[in-house]
Image 1 (cartoon, rainbow, N blue to C red):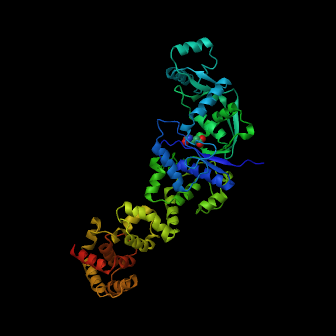
Image 2: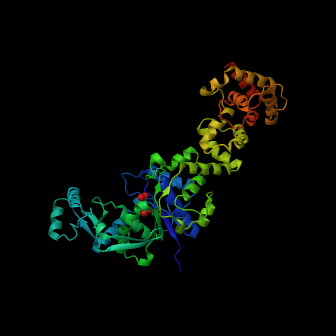
Image 3: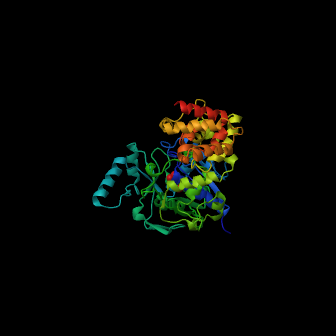
Length: 485
Ligand code: GLU
């Protein structure tokens, strides 16, 4: 009988989750959903100097916002909790003690200065750095002497000679010679556990079957396998590993703030849709099999397999993410677009949220749905419909105060004032016949002046539709005001 898949996402929230973390979470989630398995979410918060409650909450909120719902973990619970490592310290302490009792681990009394001296000597001799095994086999007298000095020992895992080979689903067989995997610390002098202990113990106790995570953690795998051995785990119960390729910036350097690596909160505030982020990140190291790039969450769960993940680094391309976001915005229904846009409009102070305002926004949104790539563009596009003290943008004023523009505005006023029906067709017909056909102006010149006068900017939704929504009275008042400039 094949085991039911259980995949976990286990971030250490020492900051906001970023693109790399989320790509991992997305692949974890997709793999669990594809296989009908369980997606477990665990918070690795043992580094209390760097993890904060705010970051933990932000990680939870980010996963929810992205729609990466988990089956076991914070808030939802499960049979293998608690899911915050800070609430599991007793468990790690018990295992560390067991390893000491079994002689798989030992107390190491070396001070930081002594360890540094060892490293220094290793550098000088040009040999691989790492613990030299000084405390592996201390006599009881030596131990008593260290204790008398008041030294607080760390717990160190004994790495046997030889090596570790495991099969990585993406990289195939990966081997580590233990010459380069020295005895490692499981528990600090103050009793706090290290990552390698906590992660391995939890993956075993939480019955994780698959560890899909970033390539940066590849080198910690032999240490984790050593912990499984010490826990007495049967070989067939070891989790299967898959190390996802690095995400590089466009300049081929490791992704950083400079070339795209910003927190997911930044993308949310810019008005990227979760579907667009997930779609784009899904393509970082994976592809659905053909060239199509518009991947829905449903498709991702249907098509995602680890076999299709590449082992070479993926490149982050902001332009592509923007293009996908534009596509996803265009695919929204107007009601969905409205729901996504309202918080941006209220936050920018463009509307307060009255029913009348919302009704007008809903009428205006179809005008801009084709034109924006991020929701944060909505307020600037629709502001002209709501401002109380309308004014032409400072850098556009000069574009309507020349003689030609004055003539355009004067003529527009004359043609528009008598219009009985105020709709985009009647507005367009009146302005075209007068400005273009009779005055012989180029549309860009003619309509440009009217656009600036009525919307305040050279960039706006389509002009005639905008004037229709603005209403006759306000449109004419703005043209008159433009003439006064
Ligand atoms: N908590 C680790 C980190 O955020 C990842 C643990 C793992 O996936 O093995 O770097």
